[in-house]
Length: 134
Image 1 (cartoon, rainbow, N blue to C red):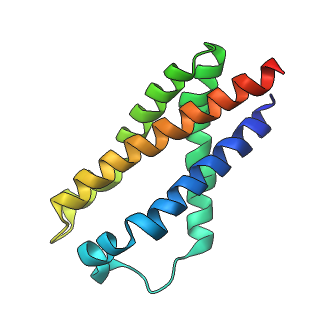
Image 2 (image 1 turned 45 degrees about the horizontal axis):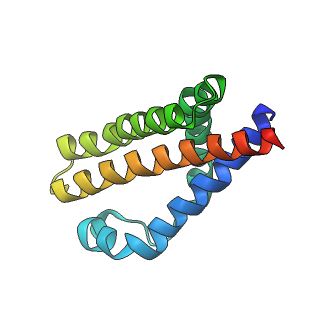
């Protein structure tokens, strides 16, 4: 499968899972924890740029190496590590520099980032392996 198709599949999977999390699971928690910092409306152009760049990193550092090794488990583990490291950059910086940034938010977000990225990388790789066998 081409790199562009791999990227597109990863984008759809990541965005769908993350949107579900943000809208249905974590919305109330975020509002209660950091509502005073949240904008009234999402800045979608900024969010879209983030998703475009972030998925590029996930494909480069986890999914493509998993495909090269023919191992969805490698992609899952590399994706989880990528998620932990990138989400830690955001959350631990906030914990270190922002007044009243909740430790609970950092812990939950690190677990979420690790899970989301591992799941996205593993699923994307597994689906591509399946489609390539057909």
